[in-house]
Length: 619
Image (cartoon, rainbow, N blue to C red; front, side, top):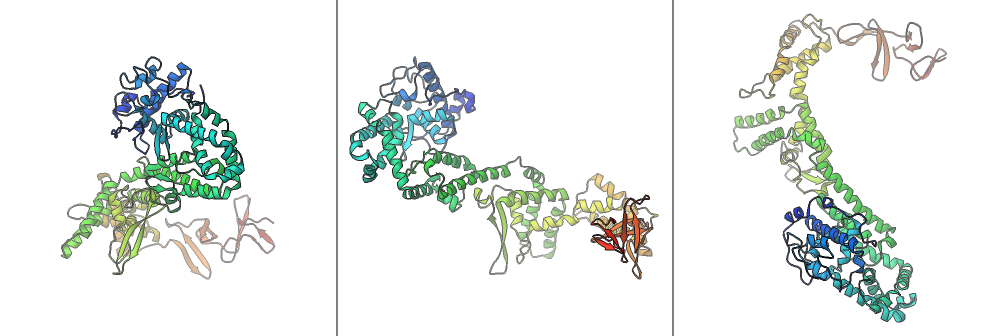
């Protein structure tokens, strides 16, 4: 087998489904081909491609049995079911019952469908994703030249004419660099044809054409010499052609790389295929030079790197939008609460009534909806906005001539790969992000929601439970403990607010029991504070003349180091020491010194004693 024979014949599993499955799921049938020229879709169609791969695998298997290859087929070669049983098995019934030419095979329909072989193979070429040997076989049978699909017999005929042209005119026009330079326009046109057509020299082009092929290497060498001499001009033309080459639809390399036009992240395969085709010199409109001869030029590198960066960003965008994204999954769990809040905000914004009671009720509904969010909910929403949405869109505030503000979405890193309106995201959340609370301020309802965590259910429950743990009815309250009792009482009052008979925080039975377990303690101690005002001050207590005491939160007078600001102080039984030595332990393993202000000294020498950066006496 030659280089175009597959080294390992793929099974139907290679394309992910049986041929019958491929055909039953095929895309809508396009108009019938005219004179063997395909009318298959210009973009990569996986259904057509899969069917084409099945045909190529069958043909490859038959080649192996017949010890031949696509390079040895001629216009007189015939195909029949006896010699090509695998091929016959994937074509419509009796398609090659009798001897058929290669182009007749290309015009045949694939078993169980209206797809012709030529249409299917054209998609193998367009997609350029299959095994490279199979793609090479497909491209030898049908390929696109100057925007027009040509099939085998036309390709062989083109090769015959081009090689005969080289045979007739080599001596007079192409046999030296000087002659190529003098006749460059004709030489370039013939050279561009032959870079494709020499592949068909063994497909029955005739003796005269084969004689012309003997001059090919020399002619090719003179053309390369010309390119080296005129490198600047050739490169300039190549870059211009690369810029104007269409990547997807009418979008060119210049549009995508330099102008940063919008393109869906779903088109990543189109961009990848384009890059691959540029590198393999398979873009019809890029003819000035071969890629390998210009690939190191700065402008070419810039465009190709730019295209690869687009591919990388498209893949990153897809990962961010995927349902498996952890931030997305966490947000989905609170999406219903966002929907409820959005509805309350929209009702308030569209409220026709000017009655203050109606307005207050609408505002209350917004507050009730916001208070449904726990701290974990808010974290999920904020993380999703900051880690996902803001990678695509950011909110821009614009002050209008009226003095009012408008909030709009602007593209961020991956914004060009999704819709301008951000329809890929939850519309309810986008509404909150882009709707102002007051017309003349740029604060959005999303901003208010995220700032609402200080008064959320979780915070209030914590104030009435965890924060007062350890305090009893007999506790002689310190100032810090008193502050906790006051906060706990405020939390109880907030949690007890009743709106239309429904608690706005929606406490569960377990949460309400937890709060009520501390209700008597909180209300009793709060009453004592109001009536007696007996509070023991905690923290630092100024005794005057530079002396200080330190009272712990529980009212005790500790012996320990206390950090305050950037300094360390040592208190013994609650009294700050001054101008004193302090041992690290009973054995005096390390010694420290505090100055007249009670501050532990470090990085200095006092009375001949040196202390390091940790405050330890070293000498």
